[in-house]
Image (cartoon, rainbow, N blue to C red; front, side):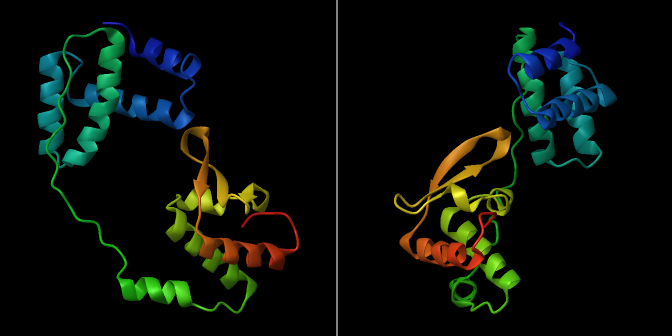
Length: 181
């Protein structure tokens, strides 16, 4: 089997994966080597031992994704199947809670900024980090688009509503400087 270090180098320099992704692959390798190896039997042993030690199916499935990437790269004929995960319904805000968030009337500048961030996240579905690092100059009020810098060092355009455009325009006017939202 081809060495894992070569896999990491190719991912890093040829596919330009992020440093966090390289760390993820390294974590996958260390996890497998703790309880097994990359042979078919070794990987089965790794899955069973990981489950016995209390690791969740979701955590194992995350690592299986990285391990299968290595196995495909190495040209191995075997791969791991994902484990069945329990389906959990994530808690969401009730209509009453959302109404309170939307109708909140901030008084201080910090409250106005936080309120604008929360409404931007609710309206667009962008990640918290994307909203927190969004810049006023990345707003296109004519086309109602926000350019965000997201995961994997990728930029994307996200549409927003007319209601949010009014809030962002008020925020932009209130800041009087170019900067973050």
